[in-house]
Image (cartoon, rainbow, N blue to C red):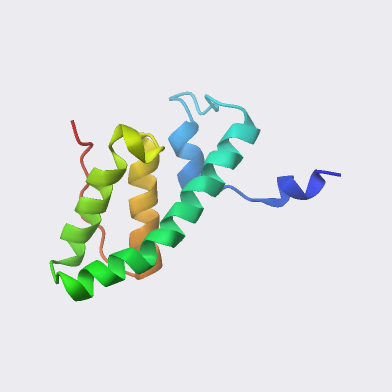
Length: 106
């Protein structure tokens, strides 16, 4: 049975990434859930990297988050720019860092 797969609660902040202006999902619930899992895992994996950057390079927390966001906004990252922004906001939350304003990289 695959019922346990539906136990994953996608937070409203991530649902918003896939919701249109009328409040309807632009992708199936399964796709949104899978993308959420990927992005949540990515944020979790980036915690250690961000902490290492902070201690080794010692730029500001905001600068580290901006750099990670810029990297995630590239085509090679595997996430779209809306997901990239969500991942960095989630990363800031996990690190308990203040998140800077993020702009999509051109």
